[in-house]
Image (cartoon, rainbow, N blue to C red; front, top):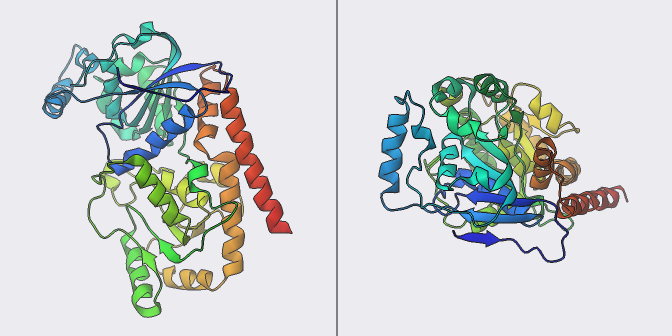
Length: 385
C-alpha cells in the first residue's frame, strides 16, 4: 500500500479516514478539482490518502470488464478489481471515503481488499452522474450498495439514484481551495480582461473575438480542441497556474456544465466548478446561471453573476460597459471572494459530508473554516474604510 500520511502534529483528531485517490493514474484536468478537495481534507484531519496504482494491462482489462458488465445478469462483475494493484489495509478506520469524479470510478474501490471490514462507516462521493444514466446502471448498483452514504454532484440526479437504490442519496456541490484561489488580502493586478476556460458558448466566443480585434480586449481562452482529454501531469502545478490566471482576470466566463454537449446531459443543468473557481478568485462571473434553484441557493448575493444572452447579442455591449466601470468591478470582486471564503471552500463541503454521515468534524476542519471567515471579514471591513 502506497500512502501519503497527512501531517497530524498539533491537531486533536476525532475521526480517522481511509481515502483512496486516483490521482496517480487519472490525470485529466477535469478531475483535479476533486484531487484538490482530497488534499484540503488531508490538511485538516487524520487522513491516509491511499494512492491506487494501475497494474500491467490495466487499460485493456478495464475496457473488457466494462463491456461485459452491461450484460452481467449475475450482477457480480461490478465487484471485481478492474486491473489495479491490490491494496490490503493494515489498520482500522472510522470512515472509508471514495471520491469519484465520474460514476465509473466507483469500482476502483474494489482493489482495496475488504475495506468494509476495516472501516466503521463509508462514503461515496460521485461528482458527475446525469439522471438519464441511472437506468443504465442496474448492473453497477451492487458496488454502490456497499456504501453507507452516497453523495452526488449534479442537481436532480440524487432523487433518481435514490429511487434506483431504494435509499437516500445526498446532493453535494462543487467548491474550491479558496486559500489557493483567493486574491485577498493583496490582490494582484487584473491584467486579463476576459478569461474563458474549457467548454464555451460559441456565439458568445465569436463576439468576444470581435472585441479582441476591434477594441484590443485581452481575451484569454483555449485554442486547442481537447475538451475532456487534457492531461495535467502535476495537479498542484495545474491548479496553481489556473488560480494565478483567474486572480488576474476581470471577467470570467461561466455556463451550465457541459453547455456544448447536450447529448451527454439531456438538458439537465449542472452548477459546475467554474462558478466557484471564478468567484473565489474575485473575478466577475459573466454568462448564464444553470436552470433551477441550485445557483440562487449558493450565489445569493448582489451581482454574483452578470447574465448575458446565449446568442451573444449583448456580449460586446455588456463587456465594454463593465470594463469601463472599474469601481463596480472592484466591488463585485471583493464580494465574490469574501462570500466564497465564507461558504465555498472545500472544507465547507467536507463539514457538510461529515455532518450528514454522522461524523464529528475535526478541530482542524473547524479551524480552517474560522480562518477563512476571518479573512473574508477583514477584506469587507477594509472595503468599507
